[in-house]
Length: 154
Image (cartoon, rainbow, N blue to C red):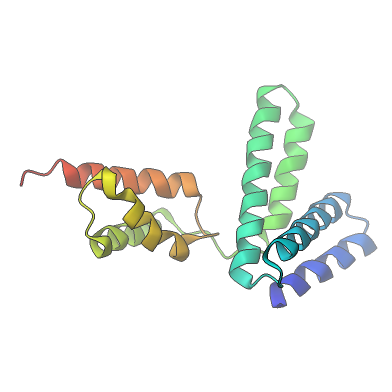
């Protein structure tokens, strides 16, 4: 449980340095991990921990967007600071080109030819990109590729 221990160590450091934002974000992460542990009745493996972190980052992004829309800039900033704390524990994000290459490989590997077969592609693709790319972006790229593939004369 290397990643789990890194999170615990980061929380201890944040407490010692009195970094409130980091402390709040890491406590929330550890609570989410404990909930996950009870849910699956074992310690989560690294990929499951990364999935929890990615979910929390997504929630923070959505919250920040809503706070901005409501004119609450200080709360949006707090959410974005928490995102920065959480992202330290995720693998580096894929570049646009890397993601596009993986999407093309998944489309070819699945044999999908239309948007109706998107599930096949996503099943192959998501384990490779999980935690390293936003699901919405992945979904849109796959949709575009399959849309283009479905329009080719045949």
